[in-house]
Image (tube, rainbow, N blue to C red; front, side, top):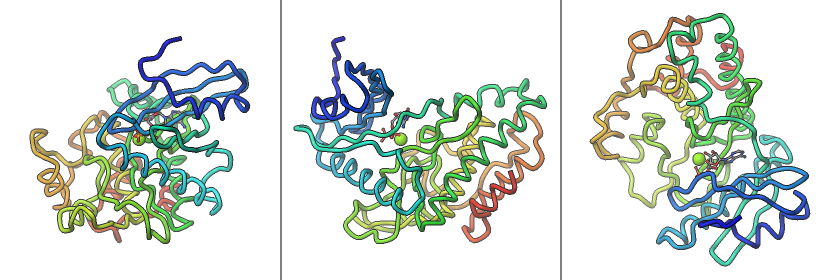
Length: 294
Ligand SMILES: Nc1ncnc2c1ncn2[C@@H]1O[C@H](COP(=O)(O)OP(=O)(O)O)[C@@H](O)[C@H]1O
Ligand SMILES: [Mg+2]
């Protein structure tokens, strides 16, 4: 099969033994200087990420890829990430690549399609939604217990398996102990940015690292569930605003009341989402408390 954007040959050579040649590859995403492919062989599949070589961002993105590998190694060593998630990593003539275990799931937005509509108000959907929220909180709680924040909790970085479990991916921006030497963290997706991170981004220069705390992940978790269940982002702002202006609105701490936009009433679930969105990080539940609440 001929590909306009083939994966790095160096990575395929390394993966062939493990996955079983011949390998089949398909491009999954190509955005912000990073490409991801699904690579399949007779013995299994991986997600392969590599920086895009022909863009001006190449140096920063290769460094981000190396940083994600470092994060995976450290998180695994700390017991915060299931062993076997990181498969392999290396260099190629265009930069860096990283392979992780294939997660058979769909992004949160797609997983919540039924729940988002009025017909989602049925007995089988409630435990399904709670299960997604609970397993997601469980993943984050393991990171938080080891002193890490994921720092990019958002709908596309969460895949929901067929049996209703949330799996967290994309550890490139994670904030852990000993942040020395890392690329400065400057927030992630605007819509899921916690107010204290938004305020810090606006108050500091572009080369200043902002250390995201676990409580920021909890806000982002609540924001992602709010968004994908109600189809409204929790902080309403004009889409034509630039990122700094949106961050300024977020930093004020106001969010839409779920009761105004939810597709149907779900006591317990929606109150817990509201608790995650508390403007003061100290007022939010911890991920561990969320496991029990959901
Ligand atoms: N382990 C994985 N299993 C399945 N799909 C994955 C996996 N990792 C990444 N993907 C897919 O590739 C996309 C991009 O990967 P991600 O790690 O989020 O990189 P980035 O957001 O930096 O482009 C994801 O949104 C998802 O669709
Ligand atoms: Mg991502």
